[in-house]
Image 1: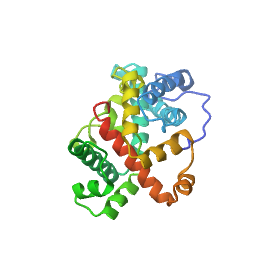
Image 2 (image 1 turned 45 degrees about the vertical axis):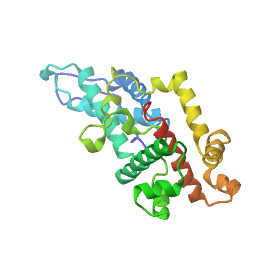
Image 3 (image 1 turned 180 degrees about the horizontal axis):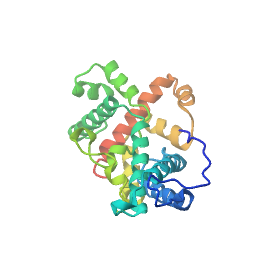
Image 4 (image 1 turned 135 degrees about the vertical axis):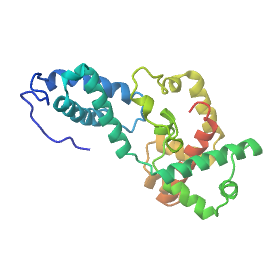
Length: 247
């Protein structure tokens, strides 16, 4: 995402009786971006939020009407947050069908783990989902890019009519990432990783600890890069299934 280059030496406003200095209010953009970034996955860059937030600030300066009885900071904050949320929606890395697949896989894994008392096999997960093994693996492939935390974890389910990004924009909302720094959560995560099948544990270790890419992991395991992507997605789904009370 690239912010259009601009040089702003003057002022902008729709109302002739007021002048809004955009540069003076630029720190507001960084403040709102910093609040929002704390509630988002690490893949979201602070600089990206600041860039689109500045666009929101400029638009706010152009549209602000002091006759409405609202302070500029309040008006601009809404526009800046809106611009940031629009960008998050636009850059959503996981299509809706893939999110639905990921959720179904997580639910199936959780159900089977409760029934079996162990990590289920891929064939068992596929059977519960009512699909062939190769179709299940295709579903995993579609879920590439999934992370332990999803945007949906920070709000309501977007398919239930709620805004999944609603409390990200609220600086007074409880920070859902705060619990992830808790020692109890870390211990739960360690236990969940130990519960993974040995191959999934190896994929996670090579990817996150050794920082190998998928192609390199494939060479270690003797499988294709796409197969590693499937295994990674499945490992994430297994972890999310065991950590659902935290997420």
